[in-house]
Image 1 (cartoon, rainbow, N blue to C red):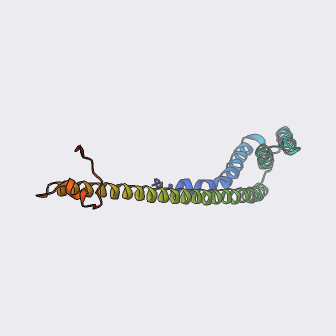
Image 2: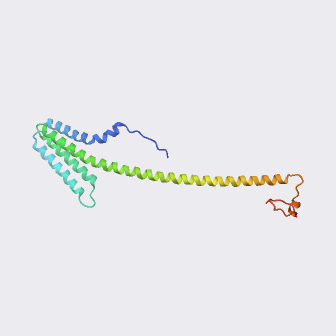
Image 3: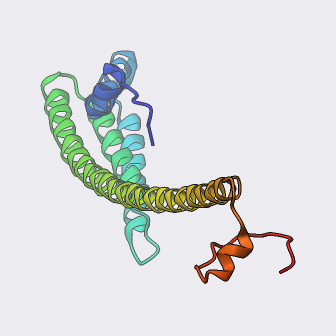
Length: 201
């Protein structure tokens, strides 16, 4: 029942919390690099990013409709749509104020969605740990009861063996007494100790 305790590295703890900010920052940085390489005020690039963003949004809407809708695919598609829209605006705009404003909004939305996911994950993990702990306690209780029962059976067997050994010793000691006569004991009408003998009466 001893479980190995694994200490998580601080990077493994921080990385999931920093992932939304890293993702939106990466999109902003790549879009500004794209802007510096000719995407600024490029109508063709703006139309392309708008079409891709709308296509990702439509895919997310289609993935979330109906009973067979998959929330993971829908969330991924909507995130891609937002990322493409941010990249399009940040690549097309000539100043930094609008891309930074959109980056702050996108990061806030990403953290809002991530917090809901983290809360659900934490709730499920807590419920699983409680269930596992209860099951572990139940198994430990059953093991303790079985250990007590086995110990009691061993003690009963040990007591019976000790009684049989003492009885055999008493019979040997009685038979070794000087002047002991089994026939005289039986004719006197005394109760006979249980013994095995080969004498014929």
